[in-house]
Length: 113
Image (cartoon, rainbow, N blue to C red; front, top):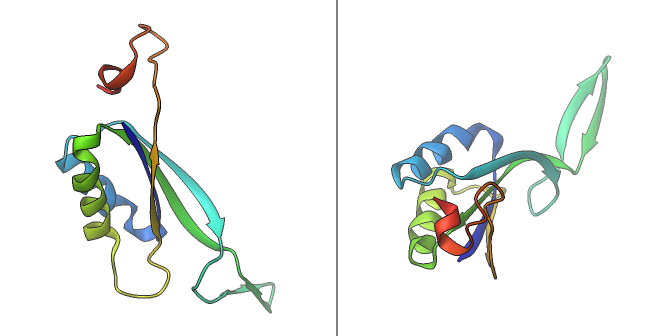
């Protein structure tokens, strides 16, 4: 079992969501985050003054998947989120030792469904 975590551009969330739904991935957590990486600072104007921030808005998507679905999920996210420009984001894959559904006590991959 793996956890796939993706940091993507905010306006591409719906495309990534649609791609994951196409793979029947339903357990997804989405968070609004800010971070800095290779992309340049964002320019803002507030009350007539301009300022820069190095913390760019992004969306973090998290999902748990069986090992045999990891590559399909990664390719779906990449295909939906890739623009070819700096700042497209990252996909991180973690090993998951165990998962438990609180309501039923189910453990392992059966708890993901």
